[in-house]
Length: 135
View 1 (tube, helix red, strand yellow):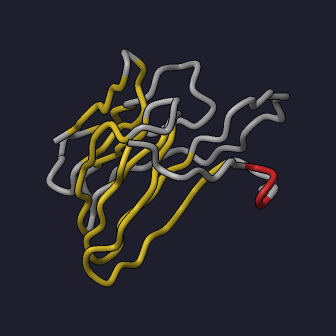
View 2 (cartoon, rainbow, N blue to C red):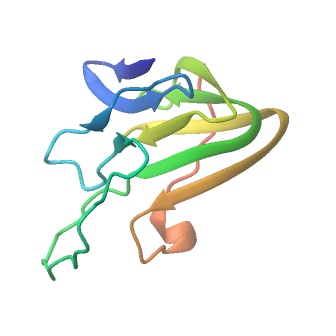
Protein backbone atom coordinates (compact mmCIF):
# COMPACT_ATOMS: atom_id res chain seq x y z
CA UNK A 1 0.00 0.00 0.00
CA UNK A 2 3.08 2.25 0.30
CA UNK A 3 5.65 1.94 -2.48
CA UNK A 4 9.15 3.38 -2.62
CA UNK A 5 10.44 3.87 -6.16
CA UNK A 6 14.24 3.64 -6.10
CA UNK A 7 16.36 4.14 -9.19
CA UNK A 8 20.11 3.71 -9.09
CA UNK A 9 19.85 3.43 -5.29
CA UNK A 10 18.15 6.84 -4.97
CA UNK A 11 14.59 7.32 -3.71
CA UNK A 12 12.69 8.96 -6.59
CA UNK A 13 9.14 8.67 -5.32
CA UNK A 14 6.85 7.50 -2.56
CA UNK A 15 3.39 6.26 -3.56
CA UNK A 16 0.56 5.91 -1.05
CA UNK A 17 -2.23 3.84 -2.55
CA UNK A 18 -5.84 4.82 -1.93
CA UNK A 19 -6.38 1.58 0.00
CA UNK A 20 -3.78 2.54 2.65
CA UNK A 21 -5.30 2.97 6.09
CA UNK A 22 -3.71 3.07 9.53
CA UNK A 23 -4.90 4.85 12.67
CA UNK A 24 -3.05 7.93 13.84
CA UNK A 25 -0.36 9.88 11.98
CA UNK A 26 2.23 8.17 9.80
CA UNK A 27 5.04 10.12 8.10
CA UNK A 28 6.57 8.54 5.00
CA UNK A 29 9.37 10.98 4.19
CA UNK A 30 12.83 11.28 5.71
CA UNK A 31 13.25 14.31 7.98
CA UNK A 32 15.65 15.95 5.51
CA UNK A 33 13.12 16.11 2.64
CA UNK A 34 12.00 19.65 1.86
CA UNK A 35 8.48 18.32 1.27
CA UNK A 36 6.99 16.18 4.03
CA UNK A 37 4.27 13.59 3.37
CA UNK A 38 2.07 11.98 6.01
CA UNK A 39 -1.22 10.11 6.30
CA UNK A 40 -3.68 10.89 9.08
CA UNK A 41 -6.63 8.82 10.24
CA UNK A 42 -8.58 9.87 13.31
CA UNK A 43 -11.91 8.76 14.80
CA UNK A 44 -14.91 11.04 15.09
CA UNK A 45 -14.53 13.36 18.04
CA UNK A 46 -10.73 13.49 17.92
CA UNK A 47 -9.52 17.06 18.48
CA UNK A 48 -6.33 18.47 17.07
CA UNK A 49 -5.29 21.39 19.22
CA UNK A 50 -5.37 24.78 17.49
CA UNK A 51 -1.87 25.89 16.56
CA UNK A 52 0.21 28.33 14.55
CA UNK A 53 3.36 27.34 12.72
CA UNK A 54 6.55 29.19 13.63
CA UNK A 55 8.40 31.28 11.09
CA UNK A 56 11.42 29.12 10.25
CA UNK A 57 13.96 29.95 7.56
CA UNK A 58 14.42 26.99 5.22
CA UNK A 59 16.61 26.46 2.23
CA UNK A 60 15.14 24.48 -0.66
CA UNK A 61 17.61 23.29 -3.29
CA UNK A 62 15.36 20.87 -5.20
CA UNK A 63 11.64 21.11 -5.92
CA UNK A 64 9.71 18.13 -4.63
CA UNK A 65 6.05 17.77 -5.54
CA UNK A 66 3.04 15.84 -4.34
CA UNK A 67 0.26 14.76 -6.68
CA UNK A 68 -3.16 13.72 -5.40
CA UNK A 69 -5.09 11.80 -8.03
CA UNK A 70 -8.65 12.99 -7.55
CA UNK A 71 -10.07 11.16 -10.56
CA UNK A 72 -8.88 8.96 -13.40
CA UNK A 73 -5.77 6.92 -14.17
CA UNK A 74 -2.31 8.04 -15.21
CA UNK A 75 1.07 6.47 -15.76
CA UNK A 76 4.19 7.97 -14.21
CA UNK A 77 7.40 7.24 -16.12
CA UNK A 78 10.66 7.53 -14.19
CA UNK A 79 14.02 8.32 -15.78
CA UNK A 80 17.68 7.92 -14.88
CA UNK A 81 19.85 11.05 -14.56
CA UNK A 82 21.05 10.41 -18.16
CA UNK A 83 17.40 10.68 -19.37
CA UNK A 84 17.04 6.97 -20.09
CA UNK A 85 13.72 5.38 -19.16
CA UNK A 86 13.86 3.40 -15.89
CA UNK A 87 10.35 2.20 -14.96
CA UNK A 88 6.67 3.15 -14.68
CA UNK A 89 3.83 3.06 -12.18
CA UNK A 90 0.09 3.51 -12.70
CA UNK A 91 -1.81 5.78 -10.34
CA UNK A 92 -5.55 5.83 -9.92
CA UNK A 93 -8.17 7.88 -8.12
CA UNK A 94 -7.26 8.38 -4.48
CA UNK A 95 -3.55 7.57 -4.88
CA UNK A 96 -0.92 10.07 -3.72
CA UNK A 97 2.67 10.34 -4.95
CA UNK A 98 5.59 12.40 -3.71
CA UNK A 99 8.11 13.00 -6.49
CA UNK A 100 11.35 13.45 -4.59
CA UNK A 101 14.04 13.62 -7.26
CA UNK A 102 14.98 12.48 -10.74
CA UNK A 103 13.26 12.66 -14.08
CA UNK A 104 9.58 11.92 -14.52
CA UNK A 105 6.85 12.26 -17.11
CA UNK A 106 3.18 11.36 -17.28
CA UNK A 107 0.65 9.87 -19.65
CA UNK A 108 -3.03 10.27 -18.87
CA UNK A 109 -4.68 6.87 -19.41
CA UNK A 110 -8.19 7.90 -18.35
CA UNK A 111 -9.58 11.42 -17.98
CA UNK A 112 -7.90 12.71 -14.82
CA UNK A 113 -8.11 15.43 -12.21
CA UNK A 114 -4.94 15.96 -10.20
CA UNK A 115 -4.06 18.26 -7.33
CA UNK A 116 -0.38 19.28 -7.26
CA UNK A 117 1.41 20.59 -4.17
CA UNK A 118 4.99 21.87 -4.28
CA UNK A 119 7.25 24.52 -2.84
CA UNK A 120 7.11 28.01 -4.22
CA UNK A 121 7.57 30.37 -5.64
CA UNK A 122 7.23 28.46 -8.91
CA UNK A 123 9.63 29.75 -11.57
CA UNK A 124 7.92 28.25 -14.63
CA UNK A 125 10.39 27.03 -17.27
CA UNK A 126 13.30 28.19 -15.07
CA UNK A 127 12.23 25.58 -12.53
CA UNK A 128 12.82 22.51 -14.72
CA UNK A 129 14.72 21.07 -17.66
CA UNK A 130 12.64 19.28 -20.29
CA UNK A 131 14.35 16.49 -22.22
CA UNK A 132 13.80 14.02 -25.03
CA UNK A 133 13.81 10.41 -23.91
CA UNK A 134 17.02 8.62 -24.86
CA UNK A 135 16.99 4.91 -25.62
